[in-house]
Image (cartoon, rainbow, N blue to C red; front, side, top):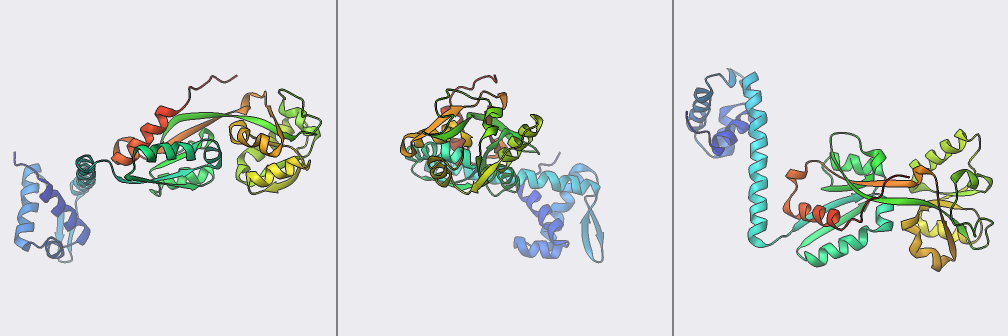
Length: 303
């Protein structure tokens, strides 16, 4: 059986894209007869017509469409192989794009990226804050190599890798009536005004629904757009807030806040890393992924 080489597949893709052998040959800088001979050889190899020829040009037959799909996949794989082996030859270098939700940025991601880039000075890692649903959408559309989002948003055809956990807590001022509590159930907070963070729209909605299940109303005194603004409002007694403990612990002393862990089962949050295809990641992106997973703390079971 005749060997099917990369050039023949490339020419077949060009012919299908251009719709005529003449235009494909111009793009490939080859004589039309040479391109036609390559196509005929492929058809002879598989024993079936791959192109339907007419006065207007050519279009793939059903068999041709199958070959086109695999040819594109093989071509992309070869391009990734060339790129990755080049990275090995030159030393890891490249550009990794990361989309991440606000919790991961506040809790740990800057430190993780800093450590990674110190170990890999020739790799640039860019981070962009998005809501969790937008993280998933951005990775699926190819706008980023990696995404970090809530497990509850893990839907679609992406690969979702368990990564980290965080723990919701009630944040109050030092003079708040709840300030001396060591733990608390969410229902007990419903006697007080809350402050909402715009970036936590999903959490805000969930807390409203949980309050309704208890036959209570959740009162949001104000919504703010940043953690700093929320901390200041909590500090001056405008309300309490429910945030991931890991995101606020480092600011408690600065703003004289008290942090009270929630005892509700849903207080344990899950963060995942999402990728389109782990095996198709560039060497640089795979190095960052391995770095993040290796340094993640042990996971705990839900209460």
